Length: 451
Image 1 (cartoon, rainbow, N blue to C red):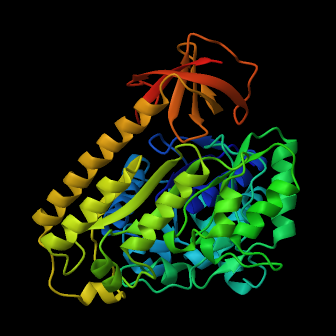
Image 2: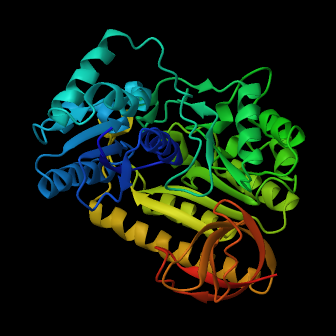
Image 3: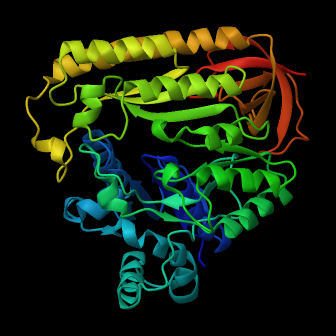
């Protein structure tokens, strides 16, 4: 293929990130050059999210920016927003091609098709349209679990998609509408993919899905799958991307207690008030959240526990919000991802009343983020001077710094210590020494020394 410059932008969940990695891997195989999204490229791929209106706004902004940067470029938009509102994306420009989320796996064939059929002759836009026309003829072979790259161009810690879709119908969410019902990767195929990562020297794999608690395959639920993967491998560590509070049961706790499972759990909490949770159609109450957090801490030494929280859900009174705030303060999460309620078209919550004013929701988010900051600082303080394992992500070129993520999900950097023999994805033992605002990371990093 004539050298093709391709840029990717991923919005939303870790599942989207993995799927983007897989498409990028195919373009690398075909001889394309992967470039940052903010530089000129021939082809831009935007993997969209529909969780919030802000995510959709960001997708539209990024598509417009790409077209403004390179007017002759082709922009391919895919993902959940593309699934739910393709016309809104098509309207952004004549050179925008929308691939609905249910056809996202077809993008795995685009690079090879261009290499075999286009080869730099003629207009790229027309070539992609021709590929899309052929795609419409047969989509029966598309596999939602075809996303498993051999290399990870954008993340050194590989992810494995073991589940997709969701059977819940939470009143605020339309991801279940965009991705459909829950489906699961067969357990033995999951094992085969993990073994390949282990053989490649990867220190950990992130198990990801829309709702891991709904994993069901070969007689396993997610807890059973996790235990099976640990038992049938020898060294690779496992990180759980996110989990549902009501599914933190004895089986999950037994699997989480294994030293080869990372001491890190992101709980999809959404609210800490039972009345609010009922309107959200969440299948648990505040007491189940409390029990889940207490149980996770009982089986691991101070794990990094985080939570998603929606502020300003329709009908959320001051009393309800204070109940949420009180529970979160009590549970002392290491981080809280807080965001204001965003009405999603097609969901029950979009028609719920009364609305919480934006300024009120915004003020509640600010309080939650301040609480999150205090929780993060307290958590870090408890880990200063302690030894942990860090997965190497990259070494900077302009200074002897190694950037990575610790087993308990802290961004860390080793300063003034070459260690170039540890490849990205490998692991090293470190001692966390002090907090430092890093020039090389978007979030606070922590100075560390090799143990």
